[in-house]
Image (cartoon, rainbow, N blue to C red; front, top):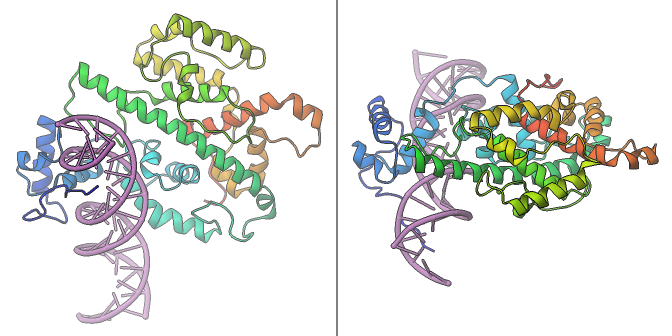
Length: 356
DNA sequence: AAATCTACCAACCGCGCACTT
DNA sequence: CAAGTGCGCGGTTGGTAGATT
């Protein structure tokens, strides 16, 4: 289908924004919200395309933007998430509060990509280039690659859930308390808790988990197996509740330490409390995750870490102890996903990677 | 001092998706 | 269902400042 230009190009200014233009845009959005970007420039008295205004706002003028040098932790997060997600900068940006996708993309292209290349790591695949890295890491590369593939798959599912939450949250906010500064798709408002729904998505997905190496797809249809509907937030019919509880009970034996949040627990919490509750319970959901290690980057770059994390992710020790491996399969599966979850959502500073 | 190179990053462009008509 | 519209995303470009020759 053909596409009309986003705005009349004739007579519209391009190029760097002046302080006066910034001031106009800022003042207008602070007073009215951005509303329709297409209509904004004329209303705000700007000779700019709406798209340009949106870009200027989201990448520069927004008040919740952190500028300046990236910290080591931020760098590591970017590398780890890039290994998981590839060039999905907006998705990566959701894990780096106050950083924009554009800024992250620029930083990757100008700094991190080159640095990885220098270290002998392919910045696209995050794999060693022709055995540049030590042999231990090379030996594990197949496992790492397989894990990567699954992590990316599951992270995509997780992001779907996050995106859905953001949309619904936005709608709820719009319906209840009109907010002037709405529509920050790159960085969902801090007051919402992706963590909550994300955990549900992870939990529901886990139910279908066969093994860490299984090839499965998660399309969100698993919502029916969740303790409450993804689409309605905290709703749960009695029948579904019962069915869920049954499923929960079935899993209880082998998954005893996996905690499920009851409807009553959920309803008794407001959003903030809910978030805090989940922060609190994260430890019990994912016991021992604080010792996951230096994260994916470390695993990629450091052979010793490969060993450590492969244990966390449920890799058996090369069939050396088949029986024990079989018996501990469930626990390993659990640790596998615990490790991924911990890496992606961990709030604690990762240990410095030896090669960074 | 001037010319050239390099790095950086704000901004632009085109595409695709979701929603509306 | 098709066309139109708005918006977000990712790739790319172009201007500028600093470094080097």
